[in-house]
Amino acid sequence: MYDLIIIGAGPGGYEMAERAGHHGKKVLLIEKAHLGGVCLNVGCIPTKTLLNSAKHYVHAKEAPEFGVTTGEVKFDLSKAMAWKNEVIETLRGGIGFMMKKNKVEVLFGEAKLIGSGKVQVGDTIHEGANVVIATGGSPFVPPIPGADQPHVMTSTGILGIDTMPKSLVVIGGGVIGVEFASFFSSLGVKVDVIEMLDEIIPFMDGEQAQAFRKALKGKVDFNLGCRVTAIDGHDVKFTTKAGEEKSIKADIVLMSVGRSPNLAGLGFEEAGLDFDRRGIKTDDQQRTNLPNVYAIGDVTGKSQLAHSATRMGEVALNTILGKKDRFRTNAIPWAVYSMPEIAGCGMTEKQAKEAGHNVATASLPLLMSGRFLAENGKKGAGSVKVVKDADTDVLLGVYMFGGLCSEIIWGVAAMIESELRVKDVQEIVFPHPTVGEVIRSTMFQF
Image (cartoon, rainbow, N blue to C red; front, side, top):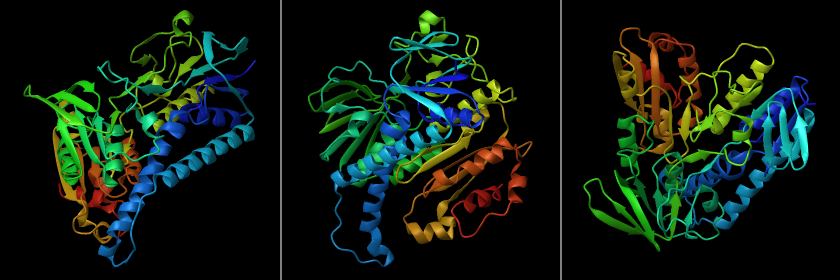
């Protein structure tokens, strides 16, 4: 009898298992493939590893502008892929070590929920006082004619290519699509993005989304408000918002229109679990309708971010341990690891107005930062936009692109969680020279 059975060893599952084991709980962690889940094996980590290789390539090509003379710069895809695989294996080993250190039992196999407290793997039924479902999600492939061809890939497949394409069409202008568009375009690949909506990254501030696309002008062609109708061989056919029919030829087509929760074949219907196509329904403590059964991460449909899954696991564990906690969605930071990077936290200007706030905004370019100028040159693109309630001065959101904004945005999450006013942030001392201090400088523009 286990204190806790966790189905799925992604960031939500394995970190929850580690912490539960640290608290002395007897834990069984079940995983059907590899420790680390999608994020480590075919998601966050491999994409960021490849993007880092591309950044080294771009920086080497730009080095003469900053006084560094180099020879011929080349990108070796095979070496980049080998490094990506080494990173994955190293991190898998690290997770395995942490499971052993915290006495978490790891079982590889496909799990099926039998009911509250019972999980079947193969012919064996395991019992636990609590069960946590952390089965994650998978790439969604819409029923587009021709989508089943071998050169039409999801994010999983494109991470294993051994030859660099000369041209790429990305269907979908969300986070995954933009990151891969950035990676391939920086290496000289012709990239076209086809997005059904009127703007990329739907949760990004509209003004900054436009500025970001402008920064990629000449590198990536964005076709917005367009619907793909078929993939005829290597021709991607689509209809524009005006009804015009067009097509783009590409060596590889990346399908990145979203992800679906992994719900099938896990016994959820038979067990009486409450879920729909969007995910398992949970409360703020991650409890499902079944007693002592919890769900965390992408499978809930709440937030498809690895750090959200981790936080949900912490909330579920605290609830099991009798500690008061809840999953809050008002200050979840997000980042897109493109070139330049994009990050945000809190409400956009549009969202704040829709929520009934009397909104005030202020913006500054990142070139206001001496460090940003020194490291990126006068052509460096980037900005910060701050959203606040004009009546209360409470900070509602910060959106930025450029530089390493993914490493900065956590500070905004802390500010919003603490319900700081803009004048409170103005009293915080930021180090100089840093890119992050532009956030504070922007707040003095009100």
